[in-house]
Image 1 (cartoon, one colour):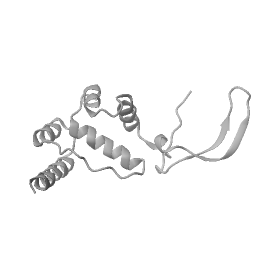
Image 2 (tube, one colour):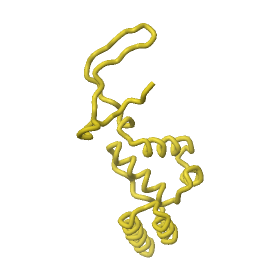
Image 3 (cartoon, one colour):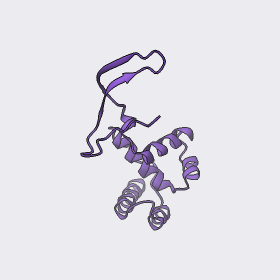
Image 4 (cartoon, helix red, strand yellow):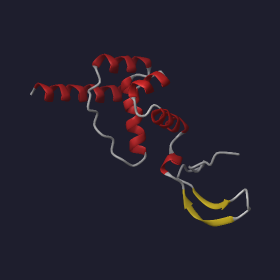
Length: 130
């Protein structure tokens, strides 16, 4: 069976479901149904989310499972949180400079993401110093 697509292949707007059918008793329900927020995640975002849940939110385990760095896990998590319509919580542990630069070098994060993470780290270090 094919997976439901959630975006129009022409204009990329969200699609709705108009018809549901039970394969067992052949009951058909027609109306306008909206898909869940999770249906609008990309395949990559859905895979990341499933991995994150399977690892029970343990970022170290997600790093190992996906072979990506801490800053990349945080970046992907923040992106999924925002796409689901929530505000991403500010990171409580600033990423170390070396981790950010390593992730940038590997192409796991963009230059803009690296700059933002380094600025965030500097701001938090300033706050910790008093």
